[in-house]
Image (spheres, rainbow, N blue to C red):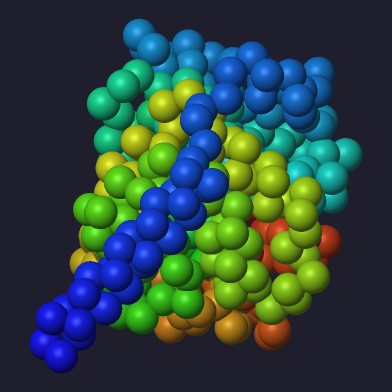
Length: 320
């Protein structure tokens, strides 16, 4: 009986391992040619800026050349595409620039690049200097919000204002609805995600983050997943778990002396509303706008309303 039970157990374990191997082989996805991805969504507004050996930053620059400048920074795993709704609303009167951070979108980065918000903030500051931007408003969502407020501390002389959209900085909740984020908390999970087509996990994670699940279309998921297969992106994405860096503090944020607008979805399950309230309370004079029924991505979920709030904020700023 013992031998039979052991044999049965070994057989079951073997079947499980075979199933896991088959799933891995089915989902395995190599990088795609950079030129193929760059051409697929190219517009006349897309440009590239070389900032160092192996570092070529992709950005989209559109709208009114002489209008107020908005520089937009996306969140973890996302890209410049997250701001297309805002750009459509604002480009008639604003110059809208959305860039891709290393490991994201269409930005090429050297091997060994590691995610670090301070380094990302320095990159954005250098990017703005190289483009010779006039004083601008920086807006960031999620991880990009963390980059934006660190930029406000690093290079306040560049800025007219700061917009935080469900921004990162405070410790993430212990429990996250995103299966991908849970896997990213483990070395073996990061090793797996670096080698497979993550469409199922992207769909699950994004659907859990928004109020209206219908917004998470096949086209959105496909585009998100294909950008992750840009050469070299996945090792950078896996170099640190999204919640590994949470350096915000009331004392630190009190050093931001810029007009600040905090936008936050009321039902954000990833970075709860309390995070937005803490940013608004800690940054002197900050204004908080809460969006009922909206999750982690107001720029995608309610682009018209959130862009209008940003336009009103920019219109109130003193002339540069």
